[in-house]
Structures are given as C-alpha cells and as structure tokens.
Image: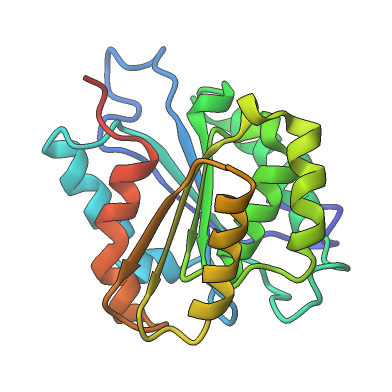
Length: 225
C-alpha cells in the first residue's frame, strides 16, 4: 500500500478466511483484526507464529467467526513512539484502504486491534485514543508506552466509561516486562476499567506467542451463539 505519511510503500500481509470470495458469499462483510508485530519483527511475524493456520483450524471447527487479519510492517520500529507516523498511518491510511479494497464490516464492534510487545503498546494507545474505531484491543507481552498513567484518565474522560473497548492483556511469568504490564493492569483496576488479565507460564519469545496464538484468535471474534 502506498503511504504518503510514511513516504514509502507499506509492506503488509492479509489473512483471508477460507470462505472469503466463495460463491454465495459475495455480499458477506467480515470483521477485521489489525495485528501488530513486535520490535525488530516484520509483517511476517504473525505468519511465522502460526496465526493463519490457527485461524483456518478454528474457523473450520466453528470456534471463531471468519475474519480478516491485517498485519502491517512497522519498518522504523526503533523510532520514539512520540514522533512515529506509524499510528497516524494506521488510522488515516491503512484502515480506510482496507475497507475500500475488501469486503469488511466497518462497525466498531467488527474491528479489533492487537499486538505483541511493542505492537501491544501501539494497540493500547490506538484503541484508547480512537475508541470509536475499535471494539476490542489486545496487548500480548505488553510493555506499555511511557506516559500512560497521565493519559489514561484523559482518554477515559473523552470516550466515556460506556464506550471502553473489550481489553485483553497477557504476559509470561518470566517476561522482563512483567512489572510494567502489572502496573498498567493495576491502573486499569484502579480506574475501574473492565479487562481480562492472563498471567501464563513463559517468557518474552516466539515459543510463548506461538503457544498463545489460538487463545488470542478465539478472544477477538469468538463464534456467535
């Protein structure tokens, strides 16, 4: 995708559910998960962790709704988050482009954002700053970005407690970011923000994320009763 904000083409991968484009499904509108990689990762990270195969399996078993997974590359992922154009690109360019190119449901409840490590930090910031666009947000092995303690009450006041997205946070017991993630979770609890907190066995590595990927995919868009 061409990006004026990044001043370069954006590399991305998109997972399509097996039923996408089938005869009789032309009018179907699919939810979308924007799934962000970690620092030093790329748009291929979630594929390498097994997300497409896991989604195929869960859809076939009727455990999740068929949905698209959009995996963009944050090429300059060592950039200070306060100066990066990556979040602006997602909101102003990527999401409108995806909705114009593919059969997506554009309701807030149909759009989720999540990420691992740095990607989880981006996901939390974007979901709270642009709450009207995302119904769910996940931070996996989350190191929250600096300044959230002062910004969170402002974001909550802007959105209203009734508009808080669904929140999922998980981290391994041996993760070096456990203390920071726990502080973030404590703040949510103090502010009475509903959320899920999952403390699992593991560290900050591919083995942990691969083991958890099915849990993530089941949470974002579970099968409807």
